[in-house]
Length: 261
Image (cartoon, rainbow, N blue to C red):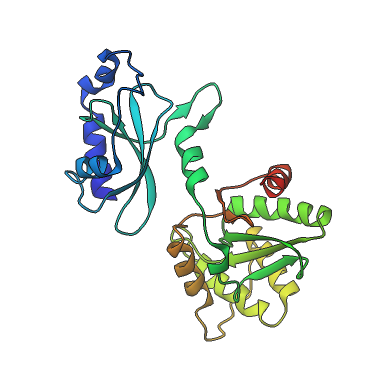
């Protein structure tokens, strides 16, 4: 994706783009301006032949199509094409009043995983082992926001006795010690789940943990699994309906998500 990002930034830097579509009839005439997935893909392929448009919508910004795209690694992203179909934008559209990224919100709405395909054989378990509400958390033992989420999950588990949380551990590349820590914690979980959870919490808090080598590649397998679902950052939450939520959420946020259809 790096190649296409650089190309998109180049287009974004063209000064005349800023008002190109504002001069068109009405500026926001959705009924007059249409584009198919095939046409949009053909336009983007002029820049990168590996890009395919999966879905098309209209951006909150007047005169702009919102294109959901995938590359050859099946990674989903959003780019924007103006109604003249000449100019492309990449980046986050920010709702200033709402103080949120409309781009991230749109992506989040589209992200869905078939939970039956999630392997939990090497996951840590919190909550009710026989619980009917299953939540999957992809986490890194050195990730500060993973720790914040972990604390919120603990609160929610106390309130919801049907909640079962699977923690799928792996190390992000930006945390050089996280991979062996993940492996050590998973190895411990095979002997004692309670002690493994305590190891994870100690790691979150920056405390030293025992280095355990059980001759397996649990953390590597978890990392490959996460990447296969398009998950490359932590924390990432997968709800029972398969919806993927990126980043930290409060207990109340999580409760609303679990109770929504």
